[in-house]
Length: 279
Image 1: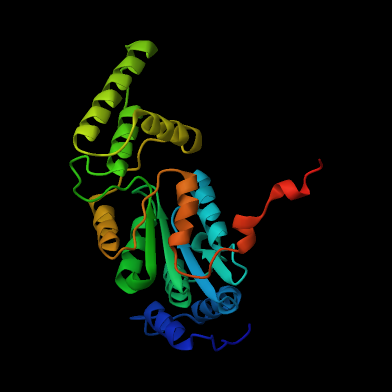
Image 2 (image 1 turned 120 degrees about the vertical axis):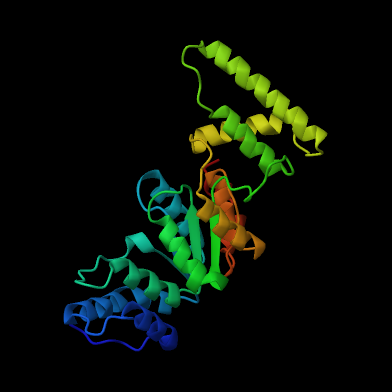
């Protein structure tokens, strides 16, 4: 077993280790070695980058695929490195929770933390609580379908889009014909659009229809729902200008530009694939 290295940001890492073993007077020797192993395996990736990101969220299924697509966008600059917490090595500890080791060490080592949220269940809530308490100033959150804590009117285009998605994905009465259901939803959307326009929101029927179709072909799911605790955390980050809602994958990829750090590579915006095509 290799001994502990002295990381580049050693003071921050020592703070993390102190928290990991806090209150445990005689930790098992195996737990100590597991913490050292994790440091030696995972932290060098951050130390070799000019800008590093820890990515939090849901790590399985479609949620995980979207989370990793977002991480790949952050990795575009060659001098940037992002690590998805759920993709790091497993630990075999006897007493120390694996979660404590990973989140404390990576959270301290990363320059910035990005949380991508799409639902209220699972481990996202404990992670969100930890980063709010320990790393709030370097954390940016990206909640899907979030429009605010107590929004009860149509004030923005985002409000209208979320309301339209709620209408489109609302539960249906299966005793009614498909045609009847479609007609009712069309009427509700038309009423929603009229109300929004009366409130001064600049959005057209075509724009609203296009957004619904885009959502249907991209993430064919009802609007995300969050607990009051989640919404309170999002509201806090929103007040700090560190919260960026999204509804489709294109929007989530664009949100990567909101993270501090090196600029995206020049070729990404200037590359002309036509130059390499046969005439």
